[in-house]
Image 1 (cartoon, helix red, strand yellow):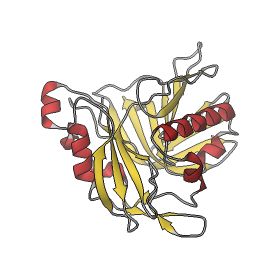
Image 2: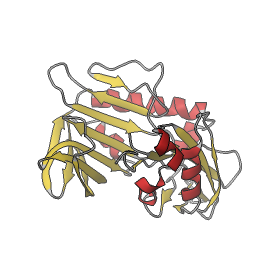
Image 3: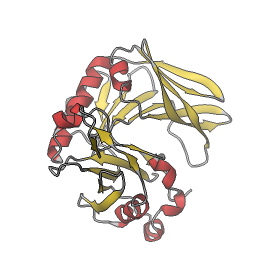
Length: 278
């Protein structure tokens, strides 16, 4: 499993300042019912649904981190292996009917044949567009677009939103206030670009340790990180330490309230920096 870092948002009552949570994450939606061919990933702290029909081995996964506008979509025909090739480029993710959104796209390939497509978009309107879709497509500039049918899209978007709201409340975030922001904080440079395989903690690598870590970044009105600390009870703290050390240098574009007052606000961005064995 690779290092996956992401920012999660938690609102603080202090005027003019919102914290940002950063996480090494797998996702959990405890207590949420499955939706036909869609099933919750129930093994950790974000909201993630996957579609798999009995007649197909292909999987479509849609993941949202509460307190963030980032959406991850994965289309998998065969799970990637360590020796698979990867191609990462700026690309697009589209919902049909609907709109196309700019995305970071990574393809995992064997003999130049894409076996998994992974896309991350920061477009805050993507989920609204997805709700009316019957197909979803990931486009990479070097390969043909990968388009697949998607079922119950409106119900999936509604379920993910309810999951996000529930998780935000558990984390002390007011989801109504969060959604009322005119715009949320956006990193001036992609968060995942700040990490590499070299950041995997050496002792964790030596012991083969994988761990979930969620840390909170407090970001001031100038977009700079004020503080960072772990907020979960993981037995191994090394991943949170790495995340805080690196992200203390990150800068964000402030969020805006409806009356155009500057605030800092949660933004979620996932990074897979690779397997510790790669």
